[in-house]
Amino acid sequence: MTVIVLLVATLVFRLLGTLGVARFATWRVSAAHGLAVMLVMTASAHFVPAGVTFMPNHADMVAMVPPFVPFPAFMVYLTGVLELAGAVGLMLERTRTAAGVCLAVLFVAMLPANVHAALNDVTFGGESASPLWQRVPEQVLYIGIALWAARTRTQSTVNSFG
Image (cartoon, rainbow, N blue to C red; front, side):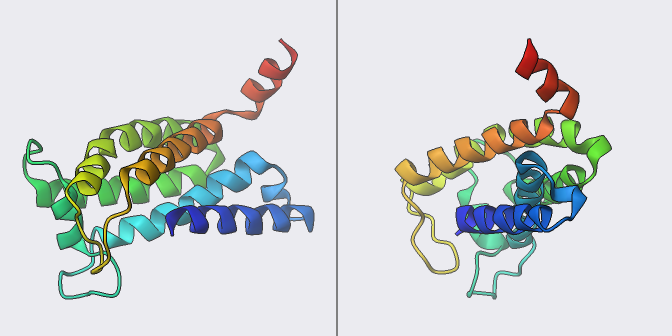
């Protein structure tokens, strides 16, 4: 579901760019905004009360946390806040580079939770966890988009010609 949100949001932003919205004139910026939309969606689960069952909730997220991580409930809140901060950072050109790099680091740091959830059949909103073969490539995709979004126009130009 998260990949679909990322792809649809990116395509909508890029369509707006082709219709003349200058902010979304490039795929890189459209993907940065698409990733921001996805992060708002995923971060929301970090704060949803346990009684909510139609979507992943805080308890589901805590169950993802591997046993070696201290203060799992706090870590879930912290990563939710970091995802929201990263989403805001991606939308602002002056903070996009830092946000993209920090999000890539966050996605790497959260990979053990995704592996733990897949290997231990953690449920989300009552649904089975997605399998490891799906989770790891998704995480790699998010890392790649975050790093691509982190590239400035100057870096892209320099790398294209030199």
